[in-house]
Length: 161
Image (cartoon, rainbow, N blue to C red; front, side, top):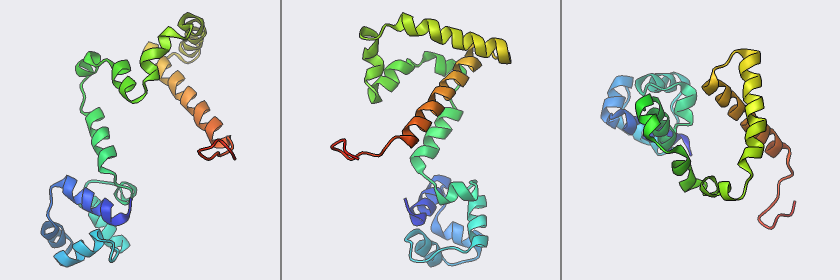
């Protein structure tokens, strides 16, 4: 995504018109339009003011992705009561079907024993409760996955390096 799109999406998400933003910054509406069309760029001072107007950090403004921001806000605004009603496996299974089918192929109990040992170790060693231990273990697994994939040779669609 380019900066112009980020500026446009951040402004729209804030519910402001180009005229309103221009007035707050002391520039013309055409200037805002040119920034959003990537014809020109705001200087650093204007960028900082834009980030304040849109209630974003400068980094968030530069990389503003409306879809990501909406997902983050939905997560933040979801109550624990609502979270308990969601079948997360089914929901994630729509994106990753393996989550709804692996139980027929994988000896879950074999892995469950080892995972329980890891969870107990985190709880005993660091004093985590059940949920925190599970979240830490999940994050460690994600870290291992990311490191493994970062060091793996890159292949093209044919599987060749």
